[in-house]
Length: 610
Image (cartoon, rainbow, N blue to C red; front, top):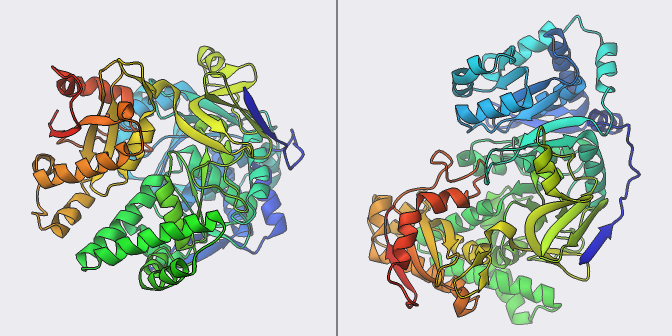
């Protein structure tokens, strides 16, 4: 059993709570911009730390005036926005607890989160959000308070609290100690009913204080970021709180279609994203170049960029490669940099493996992507690559204050300042999640001699073929998903004679690719799924992935489904992770069709709908 411990860089303060992070920031830099909100003219308007504190205090007074008591739980259904952070801290200042609900959640999911948490209030952003909540409102009689952001309820709430004293808010914000509940964040529900993760104030305070010292190049008062990932997820929520602590200026853009224009005007210094976003930027750039007749030079630039990054890792860049890179950087790569705002130096990536190809490409673009690893149960980060010593393909060493060990069966286990206090109202699940004081992550991986963690798979997803070969699906899926026309890949083959895969097409990138390849861009997903050129393109992606593994681990057949896997269809979580068990059940007939009468066929592509 290999273990790696990183001592905390900050002495723990059991009396501190999340409100102290804002108080300390205002004390340090009251007049520095902590947020920036979009203006009608297309620019950005800064909000200083002191102004943010003033708005937080006013809103918290409104909550108190409305009858919110310390310890009360309040649901929130809101897209990524300045208001999210404003509400988050105001609720803490009032002594209460926020329960995030994904803004894409169905009424039944809203009902579960509100009922299980015992919420007494609900904040929605839009009329659509409220309508979904209103469907189940009668079933949650305890929810006596409702507010809607789009109708101006936050301003009304703040105005209603004018009679509440600042002393009362100061008293309330100091009620919680480090071990007290700070928020309930419900898991995505990939393996059943969502469980409420009890994240404490110490989880936020100690993880923030140690993270800032671990990656000071990224998190500091000179840096800025544009958040677009949903703040209902722990990844963006933690970064939002970390940014308050670190003095990072934060902007928001919930509409991903407006992301590039917003980045061009906001000009962030670092980004927070999942690998799919980096894949989309790369693929969109490639297809745009292809449309302009410059696809060949883009691919050459990408090839040289990757080779250049690998040479940097090797310690020496040959003169010829250096000159090639300088030319192509000016002609191609600089344009991508400009599209990202021109100032991005770092990115933090999580929730899935990035892949070596993209890691090297973006590094030569001038953007160091620091892959990290963690779960809701660990307040987001367990580990993150260090800006001063990052390793492409690894997710870094444990954060200060965190220990990681690899169990005998390969499972990654963690303990430390970030690990949650258990599952809400679920002692059995809590007991199952721990081995003594060690949290069982359910993921498998390895640690190198420097303590850098590498994720190799998900424990429950390991496939054992009929021949006894054990295969981690992600090793095959991630490279295939990098292809611009491919959306999702689900590797199958448990107790089957060979490995196969279900594949779906990307409805955004497909028309562009079809047009660039002289095909009908109006082709439907169903038509494309049976098109020989499309099948051949998918086959090439499968072949490339297969080249990285042994024959026994390779994908021998695949089905291109003529449907999309979505959150609405029940096949994806709100953070766009696949619900593997649901997909295997819903597409069982299609999967069996690949194996009926099959021995060990040569790799072939098959198009088949559900």
